[in-house]
Length: 136
Ligand code: CMP
Figure 1 (tube, helix red, strand yellow):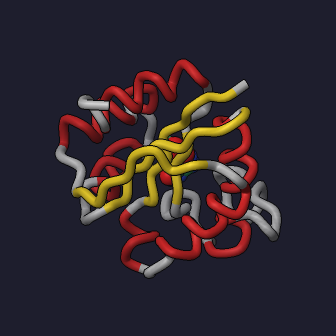
Figure 2 (cartoon, helix red, strand yellow; figure 1 turned 120 degrees about the vertical axis):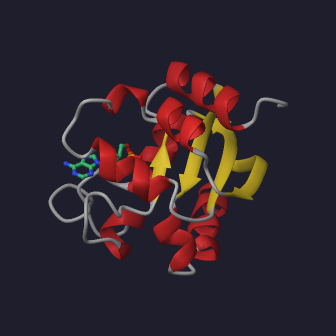
């Protein structure tokens, strides 16, 4: 079933010049980029995006990090796009969960600075796409 997912290449990915590498993996997998923008998230978008994490110990530093510089927001489309991108990304903890061969497993060491975000369900994707790309 064709679906859409919202992906962020977070400020650490842009800062480390891994945008091309990450997009290359997305495209080789067969997912299609249907919208993409380099932007710096404001506080409102960051809070909306990470609303489910409000109150967690890492929430304040997560907000500070995600608004700290430019990121790439993209909408991907393809069969089972949500699960397909999460498989490419690897687990949230890049050392203990993400295996080699995944984006986080190959390039990240820290759970906060884990390079990418991908929607965790079709429902989250719909909400996140509306937040990042209100005109889509
Ligand atoms: P992401 O997939 O964008 O969803 C929530 C983000 O919070 C996650 O990636 C990490 O960047 C961050 N995060 C999750 N758990 C922790 C944690 N234990 N410590 C610091 N950051 C975390």
